Amino acid sequence: MGRLLAGGALIGGAAACAALVRRGALTLDLGVGRTIRPLGPVSWQIEASPEVVFDVIAAPYLERTPQALAGKLEVWERGSDMVLAAHFTR
Image 1 (cartoon, rainbow, N blue to C red):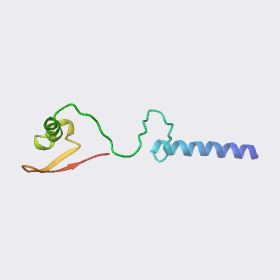
Image 2: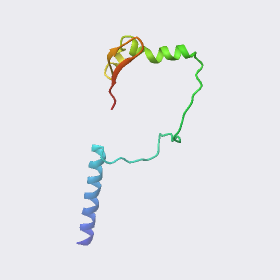
Image 3: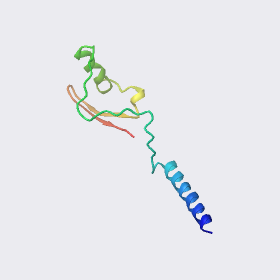
């Protein structure tokens, strides 16, 4: 009887864990496919001129919002040197 009870508890626990994983309430970190970096400043060497980099970053805000960003970015107000925008992230 004790073995049957222990087996039922094990199966019930496994089913509860599986339900939590399916709902996203329990995550299993297997450490696969991740890169861990220390916190702190990060720097990259960019070969483009500062003006080109600024133009590329500012384009979705100053010009018409690209269709690919339409669901993630909503520009509320544009000025000559400032933009008020809402960003939508998951």
